[in-house]
Amino acid sequence: MALLLAAGMTGAGATAAQAAITAQAGAAQTGDVLARLKAIPGMQVTEKTSTIPGSRWFWLEYRQPVDHRNPRGQWFEQRIMLQHKAADKPMVLYTSGYDTPEVMFTAEPTALVDGNQISVEYRYFTPSRPEPTDWKKDTIWQAATDEHRLIRALKTVYQGKWISTGASKGGMTAVYHKRFYPNDVDGSVVYVAPNDVDNSDDRAYDAFFKTVGDDPECRAHVKALAREFLKRRPAMLQRFKAAADEQGLTFDILRTQDRAFENSVMDYEWAFWQYSLQSDCASLPAADASDDEIYQTLDAVSGLSFYSDQGLAPYVPYYYQAGTQLGWPAPKFEHLRPLLRYESSYQPRTYVPRDIPMRFDRGRAMRDIDRWVRHDSEHMLFLYGSNDPWGAEPFTLGRGSRDSAVYVAPGMNHSARLIAKLPAGEQAEAIADVRRWGGVEAGVQTFKSAPRADDPLQLQRPPL
Image (tube, rainbow, N blue to C red; front, top):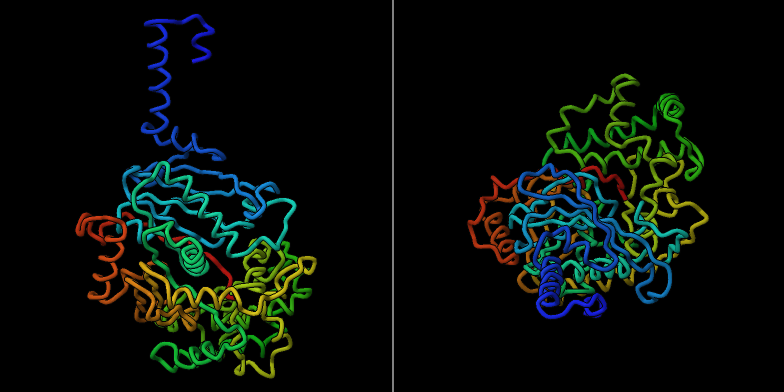
């Protein structure tokens, strides 16, 4: 109004100008989603070409404080991928737990509710990393509060039902967020999320590897191959060195290629069951196969380059959290003894550069999470694959948990699409819960025909 009066506009002219301003403001509230997103303070928006029919694709950067208890301090830009269908549809919050894949994909709950989807990059994963980096702020509460601020901002646009989801570390992230901010979302679908309550007791993993699947010959063959790698250490290292030199890999963090090789061998059994199905045993080479065949299966299953500096660098934020709050699996490698030289190196401290201090919180954070899930959680689905090592220490529900369930998909691995793999009765129950939490009428969309693409979680690498 001050500008209008200064321009000498009065009467009908002023009224028309005021109406124009009011209409412009209204457009930011009810008009095109791009304008509404750009109107959010601290939000940068770029629209990209959508690869999913009926959706628009936006890359968002949202300004977050490094320390939510000290908003006057350092800030950073957190990256989010938004797949928009309509502001009045449900919103699915996909927490990757790692970096954000730069591809469009439809998570299983998103397909079930025919909703919008945001994929949130976890703090400290590049490029959502503050510089300089205060690693003490890489905690589950700080990350949950990132999501809380983002949800609060986006609810000015998406005011319908919200569902959170994620798999593996992304599933853990969804649980932690709901623990600290239970009213942010109307339901959570949590895939293959480990629950390491007592980090000093990992007997569950040893029991798992003794009984996984229903084919003892397959279990024995995977173990025999792991021993064979160590028996042929010189031949394996010769091939590993040649590949590392060709790729320009360095090994300052683990110090030697031999240690990197052995850590990959300790991964082999775990990685096979995490990413493969029991039926894949038939494609594994015999224990007396050639050196080239033996090396090829080690590289294909474990990924020998992972324990190079270049392989570890993207996952330092994860290993930092594992070594300070989350805990980590430490199975016994009895079938590999006495061929191991560096068994004690199989832990997060080994994989984080030494100039980053770490101290484990003795499990306080995970005990708090476990108590909350058992006694206070509601509207949560936990899904596991029966042949997935990460499910050896699962979340369990207690008397205080409400409107929640745990499902196990028979014969499945570390997959992020497990509702579709459940027996028919359980699948129907899970679908009904997700749709009810999303405020969607049953049958609004058939599950099998929902648009989908493989969740990029399958590419996430850390075996710990």
